Length: 193
Image 1 (cartoon, helix red, strand yellow):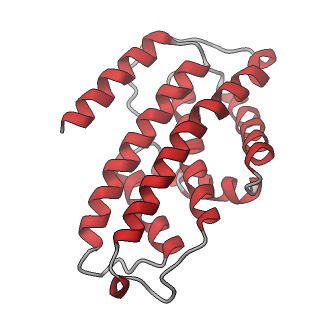
Image 2 (cartoon, rainbow, N blue to C red; image 1 turned 60 degrees about the horizontal axis):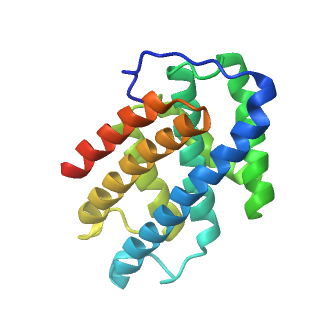
């Protein structure tokens, strides 16, 4: 997403199973925290700013968050040269399977959500906008309501941090401490804005 890291590390296919286990463990921690924060934001929305029911089924939201994370981490591994581009699909498939096996969430649903973000080509503004639109759809939020701009701003901030945290956790799983340190700096800068 940022494309400013220089060191290239090529992981080998025989390392993928271990990398996928680490990736899942690392991104799941961020996923849980982020999911809870999104639910808090959605629960703060006044009833008149929602369509229909005031409750929503959280599973699609959790699947959408994993889809967003997968898009961010696959783009990051490509851009930073952590694995060959030809290996990205295999890594994605292994990770989707791991997430589904460990969480019980739908593999195809997560993949479908991930695919929704591909047209953004790593552009954070586009990713943030698509994520906002998806959360609105899943949670029946009226995007034209008076509270929508405030909700959008909160979600943009959260999804930017989620993308960076996911990239950092990806760098950790690939054993790239230099990238981790650089992403920590980006996170610190982002939290000061």
